[in-house]
Image (cartoon, rainbow, N blue to C red; front, top):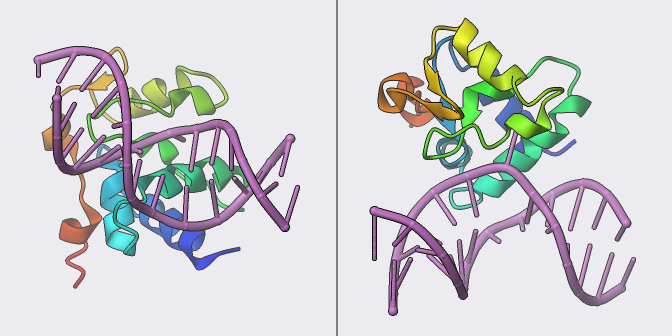
Length: 110
DNA sequence: AAGCTGACTATGG
DNA sequence: GCCATAGCCAGCT
């Protein structure tokens, strides 16, 4: 498996409960800024990962649950997020800025 | 082997 | 402010 995927999974697993981040933020943290698609692709391949990857905590830059349809059930993502205390308006995360978790900042990585 | 697709993001009109 | 286009790169057909 590529290191890229391992790093994505590692970062995603580091996302605290009740927090969310964006594909772009993860991509930036890894160093593949601009390749946010690859992060999403890694999520799609997360089913090949031996450990659970909280992909439901990863949303797009708008705080929209774009990847919900890739879960077992379309509402699984929403249910998981609400279960962690995140309020949602349909597929849109409310107070997204407040729940936003930037690995480049929170992990104080340089 | 070559081309298309995709869980994104930024920029331009 | 919303719609269209371009850049990104690895996996799948």
